[in-house]
Length: 286
Image 1: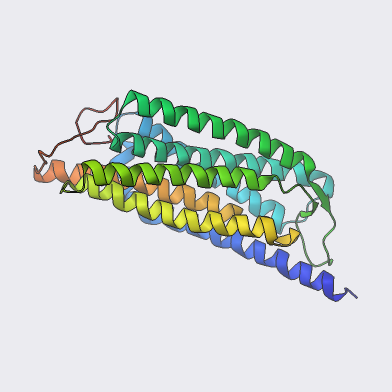
Image 2: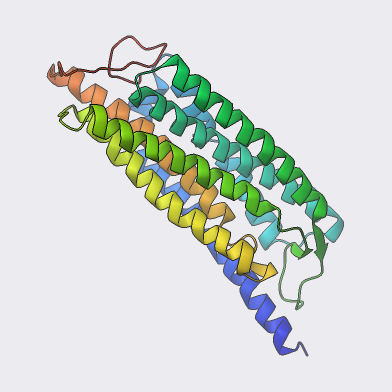
């Protein structure tokens, strides 16, 4: 007969599984409701940097998120837990990195496509990537898996692990905060009187992106630092999915504005304008 602590531990693990199911449900639902936009705005467009980032942020979650469900909801030998968990973790890292690249691209565009800005953002992005790779490697090496607290609980159960993973999420949060501060600064300085629908779309999506991910990342950090070991993965998959959903929707909305302007023949003559290298028009991210 399991004791109360084992039952409580099993209950916490079950909550994590519920969150993983919620996460993949959001991923699939968002894909289905935005597929028509993607087909019309992305599939037939020419290849560009933003399209590559879009594809890399959009489709890999359909590989690594099911992996999370696999090791959490199916019987797996303890010796096989780490390879599956590591594969899903590296997938999560890659997905968030691609979403952050889209955030950098958007902020770079708003700041006038300055080569100096690109250099600073590029160094910051690469530095965070390198540190996160090292942190994730150390975290995975520290992991130990054990048997479930009660026989009815299936899947891989973390028995021990380093808290060093918080460093990676702090860096993501720091990068997003810096991007948002730069966005707000350039908005007040250059675009506060703009009526350009693309500018409004960039700011609306950027602010929404930041607020939602800031709240989720903060919750994830709180769980990692103060929560029980059973909840270490509570918000990881959810955070990974939301990075994919929000970043790809940002690019879809930009292309939708450009399409609507092209259809109506309405363009703006406001200054300053900006352009992403590889595009054919100013003030568009094509």
